Length: 221
Image (tube, rainbow, N blue to C red; front, side, top):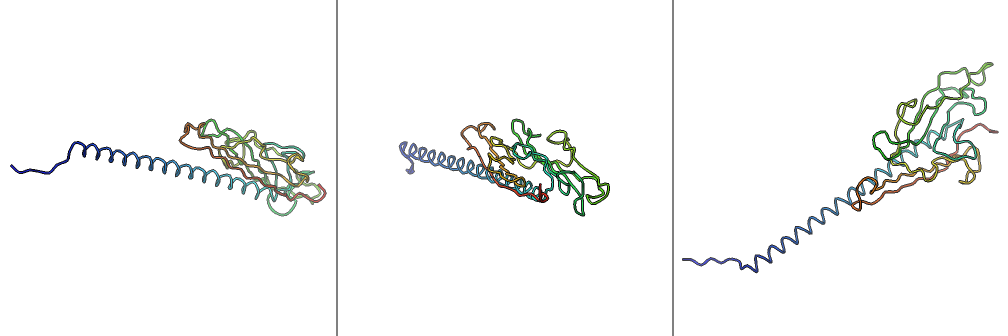
């Protein structure tokens, strides 16, 4: 009979322990890296959405000629304004071209229960005779019947997980707004890990953009 070299029981136990330690380490590394990847991905998505929402509000608001909400000195989560419509009389168009309205508001998300979203309603106002006409057409609304799909106009969800601890839109001196043609826009998105059932496996994501937008109201308003 030939003698074959083998492993002792102590060597086998040691090998199993080393293998188990390596397997546990690899699983931990994978889990941590996977968690961080999703955390970073989620954070980037939220920051991107808030940035897109801020750009949509700022670009449209900067060419507004009429603001209906919030009123001067007031803040809230509804921003309603029109373009190419006179602030005082409501006559339109002030200048050649179409007139339109925009309505930004916060309401429960249509697809995800338990969170709010920022919605953008918009629509074109029917052609008018112009403010310089002897009998100009006028417009004073209406804006959407409610915030969200089906409320009125073309509706887009701009931002999910909207947190309105501070009002999104302000024309109040308490928020540093001292001019009628300035609107302070504060968009905050807060994704709660525990609220979405992740417990301690994920961290909350909280991102805010704050900007003051000057609108093109006519001189003297």
